[in-house]
Every structure is written in C-alpha cells, then in structure tokens.
Length: 139
Image (cartoon, rainbow, N blue to C red; front, side, top):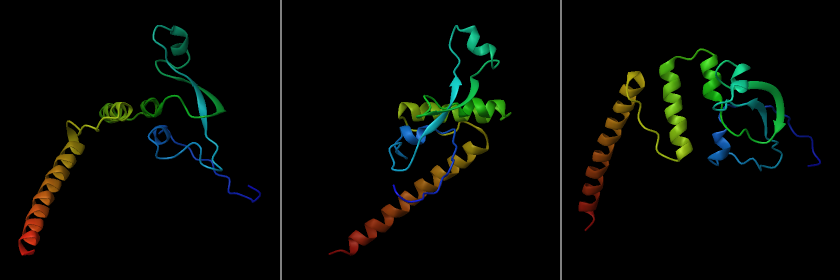
C-alpha cells in the first residue's frame, strides 16, 4: 500500500463471520489466518488420543480460514455448562443450514425470548392501529 498501516491481531472462534459474508476474507490489507487443528474423525482412535474426545490443537498459525469453528469445543474445555453448550450447538447447526435460529426451549433465555416475541407482537398490533387511523384521515 505504500503507507504504514496499523498491524492488528484479532482472534475469533466464530469462523462463520466469513462464511455468512459479514466480513470478506478478500478485504484489502486483511490477511486471514487460522490455527491448525487435528479434528476428531469417526473411527480414528489416533485423533482422539491427543485430546481426549475432541480436537487436537496443533498451535500452528496457517494462512486461510478454518474449515470449521471449534469454538464450542473450546467452550467445553473451558468448563462452560452443558445447557449453554447445547444452545450454542443448536445455534451453530441452524447457521450452518441457513435456517432460522430456533428459540431457546427453556431457562432464563427462553423466558426472555418469549417476552421479546410478545412485545414484538404487541408493537405490530399498535402499528396496524396507527396505520389504519392514518389511512382513514387520507381522503
């Protein structure tokens, strides 16, 4: 570029920001790298031997996007509770399918989601009333 640019290291376990097109890996001045892992493979006892029952982290920075987000595995290893891990898995599965994220089935988040849906429904009803009244005045 011919000018001094800021050098930044940013990390994320959310590889989907690229796959969903929220950030382009082709942005000028952006170099995308990922940490190399040895993912678990069904029927391959060797891959699990290094890490118990998940991925093996190789601690190598390599050019390009990660093939898969292992953020849930990182969270599991960090001790995140099973309910949060299950919810994160549901959200990730929906994103990977391009499907709407389902509302949480139970817990505090479910109560909050239900309340937000109710408020949104109430607002739509209010919008309809206001629009009807405005349309009635347009003669």
